[in-house]
Image 1 (cartoon, rainbow, N blue to C red):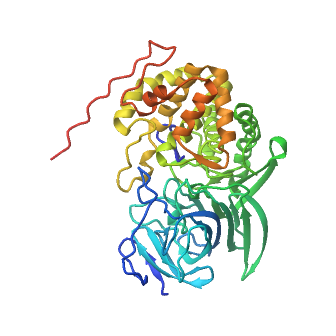
Image 2: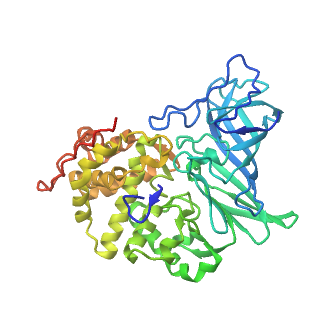
Image 3: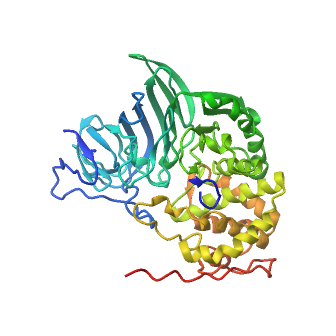
Length: 495
């Protein structure tokens, strides 16, 4: 999630520049290229039909200047799931120099935020293909568009959620199409590059530069990819059952951050006691020296603002609970990803749930009190942004606007009501079964409803329909005295 701070509720055969005002068509097809999408209700043009990405191989060359475009090569291995004479990729912020499909030059053009590729030979359903795009990756945000690269005090990091990975590299930018990643970063000596997954070595690249390589052992959604390059230090330690932990910190803040980083192993052990073994090959915190306004659960390397830890404006228990929130996302949102963005409540509701449960068990911050407060505000949240599983679409230019209070505490409230309904033992079995059954895949709200009914041995369709889709918050089981505050009508629009 982009977990906003300080509060858990605020939380392109010539070069073609892909930008809304520039479009050069080199496709020799009768019909003009058009942007496509997988039909996501909240992001209708995000993702692309007709193929399944199996792997990404990303190469970035960083000059040492975080305001200059990076040289980049993106290679995509995919399988066609339909007959294709064109291939659409999401890509909206860079210059494409060339495209090859299976080693042969291909035509390409921009259409909206899509890179539309016309291969020499059409693909048949079931064909495997390899698409190579040579391009730039611009760390300077386009006007009125945030996300993708984040410029830090000493380099760059990445924040792609919800729909910004295609501002960094060509991809099928939707969490329903997860893939394995190999990431190579070439940077001037004196810089350190770290990415999602485990290191596969580094080697001199000439001209005073080094290339660092990382590879994921599990599939990953594009919105969860992380690349950090800067004058940073990587700290290593061992977590539960020998899990390798690595943290990336601005070198000058190492001593101040160490005490916080030492808490991670215990937090992983706590989460494992709740939902089972940590799902990935490594974990760690990327303490970015940047002002983002949020924290983010990038896979195996969660992104945090450094100042959250070195400029404490919050009590220790609160900061620790935020750490657990992003850790919990490794199970809920990363390992089990949302099939559509309307399923976001499954990510944020669960991460908020374990954040609150940790605060209760470790700091005496009562879960019931937090849920009662959320219940009081729930009707207002539903009126303002839609019910948990049917959030209203984001406003233009504010894609992260789907991250509203009702997908955080409002969705945790649904889980609380579910536990009240089916009991703690069934609820705990459900949580463990969910992350085991859907590990390394994407899942839907309907999948969760079905599993909850299976585990509890009762039909929960009506319960979930009311709690996830209703305009009003249902009565809380076991707490008939809880009252929701009436939502006030919004002011009339000026005319």
